[in-house]
Image 1 (cartoon, rainbow, N blue to C red):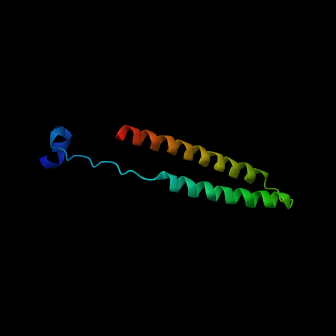
Image 2: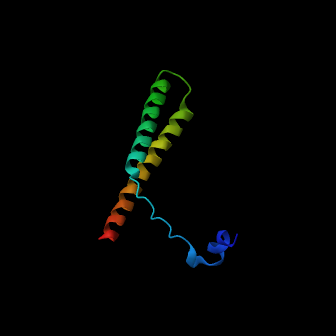
Image 3: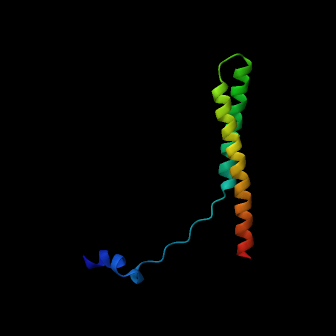
Length: 86
């Protein structure tokens, strides 16, 4: 029973934590932004056809804006990561 509590009592016996995996978030943010763009286009077409989709247009536009901001953030985060790695 003492083995289970050993890492809590003595941190020196802990296993080393694995290094975090570096994930390419450009793909994730790009796909998400693309889907929000498609939804925005569909909402705009429905708005032109006199459906009441103003709230959906605002929501989709916010999704596209946030997606673009996240792509910009990822660009600078990746740039810092590469710069610090050299």
